[in-house]
Length: 273
Image 1 (cartoon, rainbow, N blue to C red):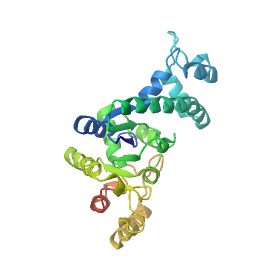
Image 2 (image 1 turned 135 degrees about the vertical axis):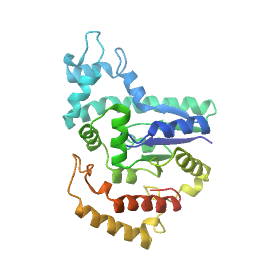
Image 3 (image 1 turned 45 degrees about the vertical axis):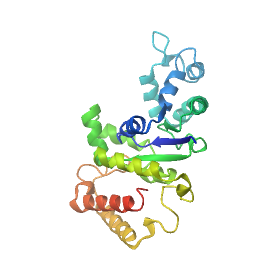
């Protein structure tokens, strides 16, 4: 029986690491929605003419192709334009993704994985059996983005502020992969989840915790929640988008300890939320 998993997460969370594990070790068929979107924006493809008409010929390069960098800068500064662009591209991408799923299923593929930046916002819930959120703390993502892509802290936080928040990702997904640990720990979380019988996962609330019996309702989890709230009141340095910057609580030893304990609680409850 085929299973379709949608994988999402913020910039710098290491989604490619998770996808590589799913492909190499669990023989998943990967569908990269963003790559499909780029292909559909090429001259002669279904989205190209609509985008050129909506945003003008100024968005075209001398070779007649879309100037993706210029278009990105335009919509990044204007949410209405961004919604318009997404309204052109995403329905066509979803249609192509459905077709690819059908082809893979006919070939006998049992595990199909979709990666999309706007997995939740674009309504991939209706296509997927479950959605996975790849999680890494914001400060660690900023560090990775600087080391791997040369992004400044300001640029990284600006990108994050235009993406879903951590709580929104958690509410919209069924399972959290903590990718801020070692590669082996990430692999173990994935293997454990895929080994669970499908019926065992049903009856879980969005975010991956079983309903009333969840870890979020345990006394220790409630105590952690209160302590986190108190720490937040002490945070003074805030980067764009409301994330603490390098001088904020993310660097306090107690905050780091809380983060580890929360992650351990979540893992002990089935690696969820």
